Image 1 (cartoon, rainbow, N blue to C red):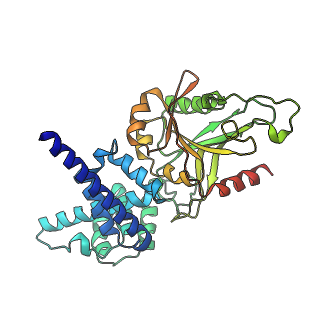
Image 2: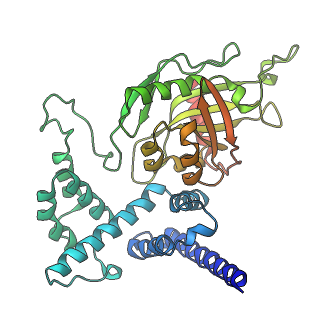
Image 3: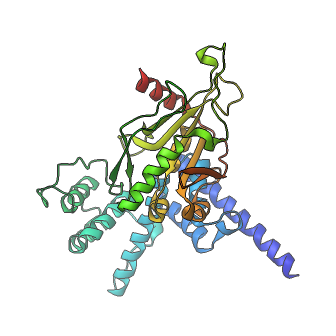
Length: 366
């Protein structure tokens, strides 16, 4: 009897999750402004742990849902953040005896709530002065952005030693630090990688972590980890040869709210694993050298539209964390002691924007 009840509960959870996913998909397609209903559906999945029957974590469900529905993951998390901010405001006002409309009737944009939360992280006094204006549409999103830019620690007016930075499209970006990469090359003549490139990371990394990232890039430049070795084919034209090339910091324009490009840590183009040598597979490889970087990256799922395969390249100790939080179909490469090993193979993706990537490669090589 207990077994039957467990099976029934599992079936019910899966059906509920499928129904919620269908409703979320409809909201994405036809009602992008109805963020409150979107948030309540997300909250139900998380609070009732409906993801447990099929996924290893709530984060894995989010990433898989976004890839399968071609939705920008950052929008998903922003709506979740907006709902949390509104609920916190409700509680604070309730403690004061002030009634606030339920979240279903909230008349405030999700973006404004997210920016308010960012302001609160740097200056709680300013945030407390703005909260009522935000909730009652007494301040525009543009003005909120200006307030946020003015209080950020990296604002040159607050620190004259800092270089002027354009923050207009960076409100949802985590502070980045750069790592110089050099001598990333293929093993066949004329197929070098991009020497002197750099990789941006969302979290500031320790010196040891930077070295680890550097080693990962150099290790992946040896294509043997893919399971195929390039072979010179004699008496064949150049179009019939095995080829591969690595590009670091490869730009793609994902669209959405940002007008700027985002950059894949590594783009690998190869015909070693294709059925025909005149075909080409594109692989995006995201390097994660710390747990926080792995868990906080909300954007790498957006690259799935541009490539045939997605990979996470991590040190041995992060393989377990990667498995629990990556989207279904994303491969894992474990790197240690200058050796890269596939621990979970990537699945072929529906790269419906692959032509854009190929065009960018062509422009880069002209």
